[in-house]
Image 1 (tube, one colour):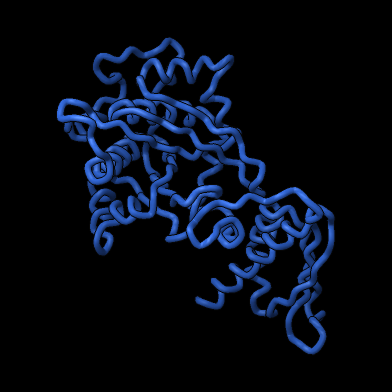
Image 2 (image 1 turned 45 degrees about the vertical axis):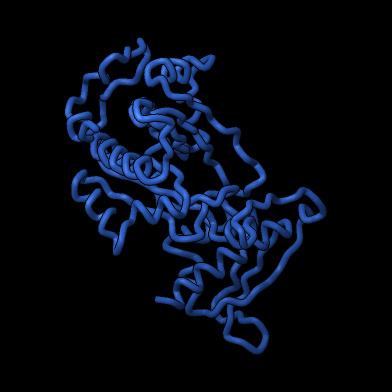
Length: 309
């Protein structure tokens, strides 16, 4: 297989035998740092990491990109798949993704025949607000991307059953070369979206509560049901005074995140106003029962991480 360095050495030439559609995005601004996220199974994640982290270290050193994975059992909502985030310049990311997909194809994909390039699926995670640019007016962009790359490209509907989930899956089907061309075209389009750069955070930006509430022991997704739980109520829990800071976060960042993801309103008692008989501050959570459960789980996670440190 042609090396990733050779494939992406030129920043202006399209791959051979592929036409560039008239409205295909350009390479302008691709020297800025960006990122791409996609899903892998737990076994595939282990392959990317390698024994003692040797593979992921080698890929990072070869490409200059940063490769991060969500932790074991930190899955994309509604799936049992982990998340890889590759960040760096445009070409660094393409080289790293090519290395990762090549390795996964060699280890996990069964070829149909000696002379047939194996086909597989790659599921990108894209913010809902950025999907419109990929689709284009009347579907013009996505059609041109399919024609140019020859890959199948499908965008999932937004799943409103998961609180705070604003990402959709963009599934690319085809050979490695077809998928890589589709990734390139999609990344070029995302580079034009100022909101996409703001979505850069971590490979797993979702509430840890998703794992506690949406998955059984076998990792099967369980969606919330619309029922009496939608009625608003309040619960007051105690949080040790020394841990209030990590719940609130710098400038209230953590508290705002918990409130936005869960949909609950959160009020913390004044300093010195403790739960009866304790030195725990009062944290009052108001919202539906499911919103309260998500907020409680997120607060517990913040406190646990502070305790571990």
